[in-house]
Amino acid sequence: MDKIKVIITGATGMVGEGVLFECLANEKVEKVLTVNRRHYDLSHPKLQELLVSDFMKVEDNSAQLTGYDACFFCAGVTSIGKKEPEYTQLTYDITLHFADVFLGANPNSVFTYVSGQGTDSSEKGKLMWARVKGKTENDLMKLSFRGEYNFRPGVMKHFPQQKNVRGLFKPVIWLFSKIAPGSTLTLKEVGRAMINAVLKGYPKNVLEVRDIKELAK
Image (cartoon, rainbow, N blue to C red; front, side, top):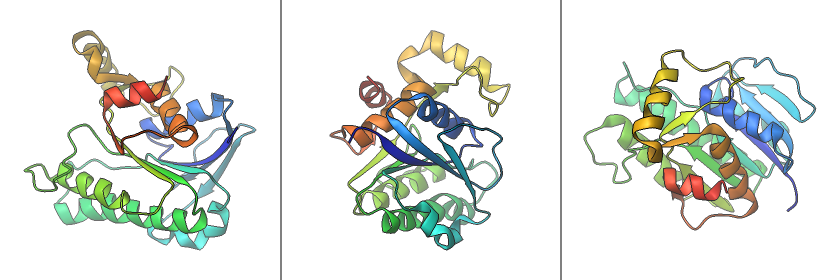
């Protein structure tokens, strides 16, 4: 496989936007389709956009999702202010449904899910968000993708030209890069690692910061 075609969700958020930038710049990526709930204002020869207001009805657009090598699922919501049933619906239900539809349209494909550092694979811990993300990871790994990878990045440094970065996040990135450089990544590394997961694979399904850095090389 010389070049790949990918779908990215969450391009209107910081992680998805950074992964998108790397995919557009990377010569190994031939085509990118962003699947968003709202329009992302960017024009590029590689880029197409599909607007889907309800991800639980994404199967209505399955024809437009066909012909891709991978999905980089970067969409997500904060757990702050949400009860477990609501957070589960927005995190677990939507992700698994999207993955099922994408797999049906692209049986020999790779699915990469952006989870989070501290995710609970046992699904039994005290932190609600970590349990829900752990269940999401575990059930994604049961699907019959050619490869399924769960990324658990720590603090991520954005591309300078990114628009979807909260102002308060910038000093946090700077601080962690000084006091705990081993726990930080660049979004360029995250995007490159996702691309390499499709092209080369990786021996682990769950990738912590060290694994992402290694795969990005």
